[in-house]
Image (cartoon, rainbow, N blue to C red):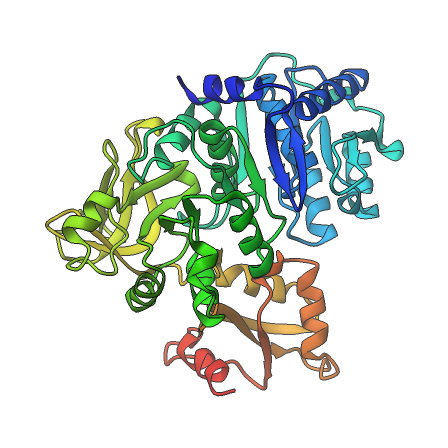
Length: 492
C-alpha cells in the first residue's frame, strides 16, 4: 500500500483504539474522526470546499494532530505555518500564503495574526483549549474572501518550510505521493512493518522531521505520542509509559542523558536509537553505547529529500561499525549521491571534499544540491565535513547566519552586522552576532537588539549574545571576520 492508503486504513481503527498520547491524555480514533466531522462542517459552512488548501498553525498538540490527520484523510491540501516565531512573523506568513482557511490555537490568533487574516480574507478556526479537539470560528475572521478560492481541483499536497540544507529555508509543497518515501525513511532499522510501538515525537510538526515521525508512527504503529517540546523528565516518563523499542535522539539529547547520568534502567525497553538532525561526535556515541548498551543508527536527510537519504543500518553497524566512525552511513537503495565542485559542478573523486548532491527517484532525475560539504569513500560511506553556507546547527535546528544579519540590519540603529556560530557543549552550536551602531545610536543596548530580533526570527535563531563594537572585525579584503567573532564568543 502507498502512504495515503496506509494512513487512511489506520484512521479507521476501532473507536476505542489509541490515536494520540499527550501528557497523560489519551485521544481515541473515534475522537479524531468526530473532530474531522466538525472541521468539515465549519469549513463547508464558511464556503471552503474540499478543493481548497487549509493552513495549520502547527503545534505538537492533539487538536492540531487531529486537524492534520483529517485534512489528509479527506483529500484536502494543507500548508503548515510555523509557530516558533513572533506574532509579527506569523502574520507575515498569513498574508503571504493567502489561504482560504487557517486553523490554530487560541494563543496563535494574536491581534497581529487576526489583522493579517482579515486583510487577505482568510477564515480563522480556533482550538481554544490546549488538550482538546473542539473547534470554533474566530468571530473577527469568519467571512471568506471568495477571491482566495481555487476553481479547479489541485493534486493533494503538504506544504512545509525547509530546514536550510539546500540553502535559504523555503516553503515546499510536496505532492502526497512523495510521502511514500516517508515509510521508506522509517525502515532504516531493517524492521518489517507490523505491530510496532508508537514513536515519541517532540520534533515540531512544522518541519519534515517532526511530520515524518508523526505520520510515520501512525502508518506503522497506528498511534503516536506527542510532546509539545523536549524536556528530559517528560520524555523519560513517556518512554517508561509506552516502552518503545526504538527512539529518536538528536545529539543534544544524547549529551543531555549522559550529563544527567540517567540510569540505564529508564531506557530498558529501548533496543535501538536513531537520529541524524546534526553531526554526531563519535566519542559521544561511544560513551552512550558503552553505558547504555544501545546501538545508535545515524543518518542524513533533508526536507527537500522528503526524509532520509543515507543511513546506517544494524547490518552495516555489524560489518563497518568500528572502521567508519563519524559517517552518516550509506545512501538508501535507489538514491544516488555525488560530491561536486561548488563552482564548476564537476563531480569529485572518492575521498575528495565537495558539495553533496542527491537524486531522489520520487522527485525525478534532477540532482538536488545541498550546502553540506562531505566526502564519500570507496565503500560509499558519507562523512559530513561542514556547511558551505556556514549554517549553525543549534540542537538539530539549522540557522543561517545571514538571516540574523539581515534582521539586525532592519534595526534603524544598526549600521552594520555579522553573525556566526560558536561551539556549545549541550547544543552543538549556538549563534552569536556583533553590530556596529549608527552615529547617535549609542543608547541602544544588547537587550534592545535581542527584543527586536524576537519579533523577526524564530526562537532558536535568536543569538546567545550580541556584541556592540566600535567597528566590526574584518579580513584584509574587508569581508566579515567570522573567526574573530568566534573568538569574542569563546573568550567569555
